[in-house]
Length: 435
Length: 187
Image 1 (cartoon, one colour):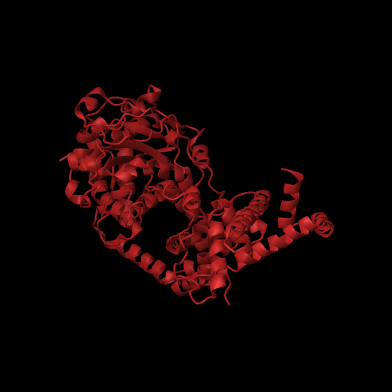
Image 2 (tube, one colour; image 1 turned 90 degrees about the vertical axis):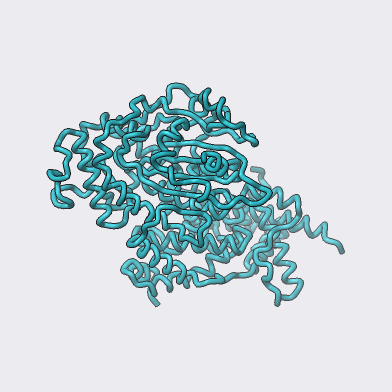
């Protein structure tokens, strides 16, 4: 910084009264002794006044009323919702209605957990072999560091935490477990030969994708996971909104695992998303049909708060034309997925730990009864896995009597607990071509 | 008049009127700042609602290490930054510079104001749009909101020295833009 620049900065601070006594004396000396600095000072005053004279605004709607109405609807929706799909074509669905969706999914899937958990997994290969890329796009591997330039948070603000906070909480914990790592670096973007041969070529050149590194360790809750089914528009694909979004909320890519998209039909197409077809997508606009064929699966590990923020942003992306459809589901001990294999491995490596410490429920499960049912189901499954009890409904502990509370009690706890999200990202063209 | 903390206590206890009063105290100030930071009234209203919604949902977690005002602004500022990042690919500052125009914050604003005043406001607003978000935010918080450097530092999450530097550089750039614009203006 030049001397003149220092004087200008001093005069700017002097205008604001943000100077020490010594600086004040120096600033006034400059103004008195030099026409040039006096003129600059007067210009600063004029600029300040010009900004102060900018017009003021009042909201064009009842802000408080809309917030309170939202809150009432949220409470009501959580009590009665039976919807399991968020469709971008719908009317103005409240952006937080996904809470109710997930709660409903928990009711259905949580009750089936016991049976699902007892079935032997059909896929027994190591999870770290399930690394792949989009079925029709070849991208060079490229490391993308998580964005960590957000403002420092000093209070319990409902905002994304810096990625380092997650990494710090996730690393170097006693009894830590590692997410299985890929065997070679470029594999997250590798396209299986059979996929290359059978897949249509993309009509667009996509930007490179971050290399997914699964080396991030952390405190795991192996029995809690969520599936996000996300359908992007062509715009959303080309702008890489998903990767940008998880960077924005501070989910480090070091805690994500690329999963082989070849699992699509076997795992997701049949089990989770069989009901999702082109008819659920927005109608194609005449003259601009979706053309990009795109399919990826990611396994993210993030704190509850990050997941909340991630979902909120994804939901917001519907309004910007990046997302066609967002659907939530839960994956609880499914026997036929790479997810299950991963969870099983983590459970195995964590067997020495207290079972209660390994089980948790995402706080989006707001309904007390749902939460209790899921907590019990998770604990029973954990005990069964540890051979601590016979896993039959008759001799399982009664709800909320002799079982510890597994629900994270507050946000501080949520910052320490990592949840798993299976993120399935497809394009509209992929969904339409799948049928 | 109840303090902000009293209203927060009552809001957390379920008193909707208390929360409405809290919103009423700050909605116009916050909206004004957001309009000038984001350059669009509709975008600013979206962020405003999201900020109050986030605040409402997290009132019980508010530790009161700062004023409610500062906490609320921090929420809004972060949302605005996120919004700006999302929008950046669509219309960059360079693009604005190239086309020589900015989106009016409110198309029908100041229709009753004298023409010269309206033109002056438009010039300042256009010049502000050409600043980076960081510079513009610092300047708006200082000159329009009257925040001290310490509060701005808390809201934006940067050291006070950085705030001082940003405000200085924002004014210097604003001065250059306005001087240049005056030179190019037809007599």
